[in-house]
Picture 1: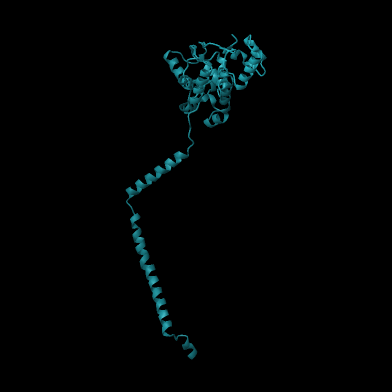
Picture 2: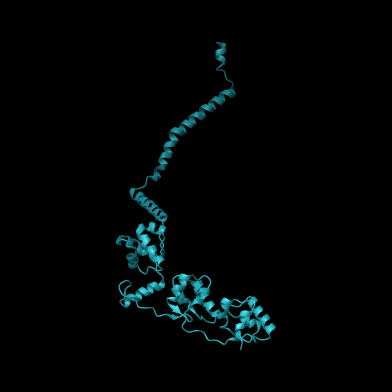
Length: 296
């Protein structure tokens, strides 16, 4: 019995600890039962009127639509003449329709209008209605189509009015930019090259312009040709200075040096054809070089 009582015998410090523990338990129980309802009541601020909720929902739906629209693949304007197999497949064209277009291009022909595209590929009216808003033709094609409509001529129905070619030696950079395949840099490069030659002597000199592709040259020559050849005084190779010869087209420093070494050896060239005897002289450029040089 004495041992049993010893289990309930506490000193003052222990009793204070037990009372503190009991007080803490009671406090936590009070917070649990009375504090949580208060927190729940404080969430009542989210109980908004239905009309305000509808406004928020509309804004959320709008943002979702914007995001969906951003994820859609964008279609950019394109020239139908250069549709590839993969591009045609993406646009919904059949294999036969794509093959007809590629055959048309392999013959060196181009598409000039939406109707022309349908005539070549035989696509349906519904597919043409989807594709044609994104067709982009060169400026000169658009201008030509407008001109044809004004004059009552239509491609594929009546014979096209022949294009009156203009002078390649007076064409401006802005006029050249109207040709498909020629931009700001190429148009300026053509004008600068023409200036370095003192004017084109023949149409084939266009092929010497750096970066100008053969198909682009063909499009240029459809509208322009050399009509007025430049006139200038030929330089006498026997009396010209080193600097004067060096500045001539088609002649570089090494060739200039060889010309003057030969001139020193023979004292004087009797004929301009003696240039062919000079070591390292580019015979393929002879006809172009003698336009600027003479031996008299």
